[in-house]
Length: 593
Image (cartoon, rainbow, N blue to C red; front, side, top):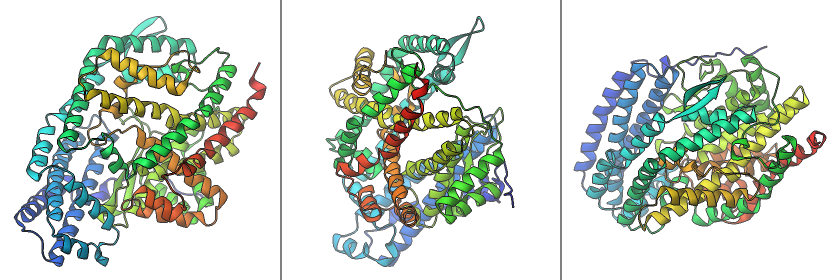
């Protein structure tokens, strides 16, 4: 029997009383709870402590759900004023929640050591024990509560102000593009996509030159923004007595410094994978060397198109082949209105997955145009949704995985479907197009992003001594890109620091590298699945379920039997990419002339 699928999501049942009512209710609950915690003396009663923990994490989960819902509203129609209104109200609510959490962290940090050691072992705290211990430890590593609260308040018009200014200035950039003899101005993002993906290399080259010229004209302004943005973060870390600017990044990814060091060593050791691919790409495309704007341009284009129903069948089939549980989950998502796949003019560009914990559901947005890439995107976002489903069974503080782990399940699901799509491809051109997609996506995480991370690390270190000029930032980016790409590219893009918003994210420190962490960790799991397909799904579910509470090294040891602090696991993580490149090199031998 064929599955019934819907192309539009159902948002109505998520908040049946309306979001306005929910916002008012949560504001009132938050004010009352905040006042209650502030007036509490040092907790000396376990039952009172437990009740406070339960109330805070319930509210934390509810506020998160409201924010995710508001994102869905504003994304399904970017012109909808109602959606923008609720986004603004949600941001205000989130700011209040952050203040409440600061007060709550102070509350648990004030518990006497003797009481804390006894209480934290209680059975009632199973599932959030590590999270609470992290909150208490991190609180003790920060400034006095009143200073942290003042910094949080001032950052709204300071740190976050620089992020807002970056987004505003970047949105204003226009790139002159010549098409059919006429010059039109495009947004930077649109021009960049055209420069990277156009089938006509002369078009890519021309637009890339315009992009570089626009960057040159604006480099000083963006250098000033980046300097102040990084300066705020450096100053904050110095006030807290943190000598390592990566400390917060380690915390957010729940990784140790040795694990990241081992991962980076493995990445450098496997740069030859990039070189092998680029050499073959140059041969196929009849180039002496590719340029930076050739990196994402496909040498092969899939000709086959699919209906949405066919795409859902592929996803369900491959998920079911992995495990019955994952297949049934996909059927539910398609049938119960979790996915908005129909393209329309005012819909937000791109794709995302929103977690709605209070109803234990997710919502996925994408625009399905009938390509294999759309099928892979669908699988990727449903991977996030499956991860959410497992986390929804956990307490509120354990419902959010570390930044790197958040990309793990999505990449795993993407691998399941992409490998199957390559095998099921109707033509050799389709298969090579999909294989190329897999390789380029992998190289993005294993070389393109690590280069940005090493630039960022060095930039923050140099920024401690004072502002860097735009020329110094360009030289630094050029050096890092060359270190990773070697002499395989004609030119590198030394202005990447201007156009990648992840450099300017206030919530997540060093926000480029988590994608590499998630990709490699997921690939390491995928390699284990290939070896033990029958027993792996149970380990996988266990790992994802605990990913909101346990750090990555403990998860890896407990469920995968591997040590993240050594290079062995990370080396194994390259196996799927190595196999894809080997396959690509064999299949494309006939295309070399």
